[in-house]
Length: 207
Ligand code: SF4
Image (cartoon, rainbow, N blue to C red):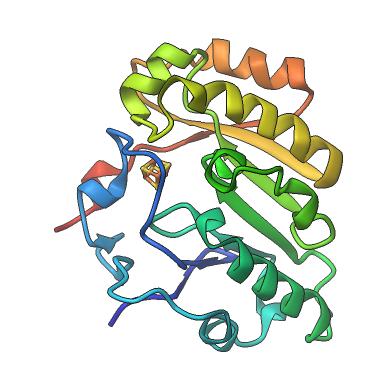
């Protein structure tokens, strides 16, 4: 059965779409339909916001609820807003550590043709943006964005917008040898935001 939600540690991940504006060479979608040999993340049908809310259950059980999954969550902007709003308003939040995080490739403003970041204000507490490289050429090569060379500068602009509206902002890269970790970390430091290296999990995936 397809997994709309899947727990990792103290976090609950939400899987709302397979769609994405990138075709990253390292994307797990190209490798497997089961995540950690356990969760069937390839969606045959995208869940409605209500189905996601029902699958979450009591949010107080988690420290983070994370929009992530096998695709780009902001392609489903209205669903993200609806789910986050319900989490913020419908439930009595007793866990003071609980935050709503969104993992994104940072191209939502290109996809929607407008600045959508203000719409996330008050709904998303923490945004993690995949920077992936320190330059547009390598980004275009390994992430193959639908938007071509305009993808990378749009991500930098998106990060700066997020700093205005979202309390916690970080960028991440995948720990691959062709990615210059120090140069990416320097970009994060210059922007004054967090930096994280995501593991490259290939061995854990099965077809
Ligand atoms: S941005 Fe994420 S979901 Fe999209 S192709 Fe790259 S790794 Fe996969």
